[in-house]
Length: 253
Image 1 (cartoon, rainbow, N blue to C red):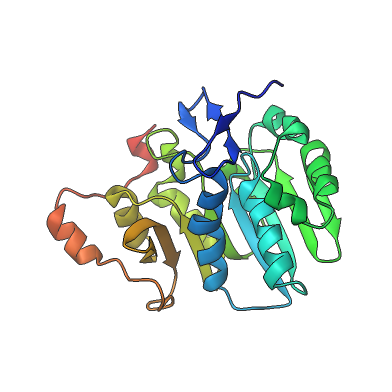
Image 2 (image 1 turned 180 degrees about the vertical axis):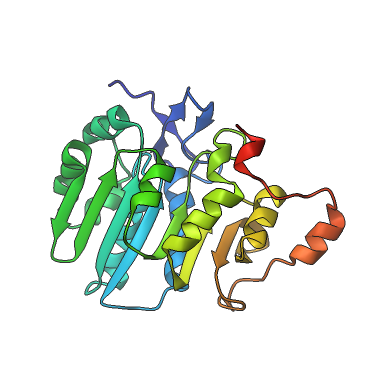
């Protein structure tokens, strides 16, 4: 597969999806920085250190969230085993990533090229401190079939306008069933429609802020769980947008 490389703001490369008419990452934020700031840093800031951490990555895409996790854990949680389950429907994309040019920062990951080759070819890698499995299946079907529960969820599919069934009440209720009591969900999404739907599913929502700019959302199942991240006042948001309603599968099928 020939790549049409697109350089994002931080110099890391991403791709454009003709199917969904979206880039895999924000060109303004940069692919690597988006992964770190919208997912990795906030997720681990809100996760208690443990002997093992179970992570659900939706979706694998180009693998930035997975590899950023490995780099973070190697630096800050060297004795913690990561169990990462990632879902991705585009098998040709996965196979093509053997030759993808990742940021030089990933070269710091122990056995990175071995991991990259294994995941792109066999969709699995296992070592003493790492287990990664990519499930090549529709994400909702894959999630429903999982018998694991997770400490961290990266909610990172394409946007509501492109993949609406990954932002509905039915979908978030499914995710809740797979999340542990103290789990954290991270997403770039800040749409009032999405936030309202999540809140009505029982999620407590927080702003992920970089200086004065909100760059994403954190969600948990317990009130006041993330003291370092400002709560989102959904009552106030509903007063501003009284037309808000819960997103359902039936609205898009």
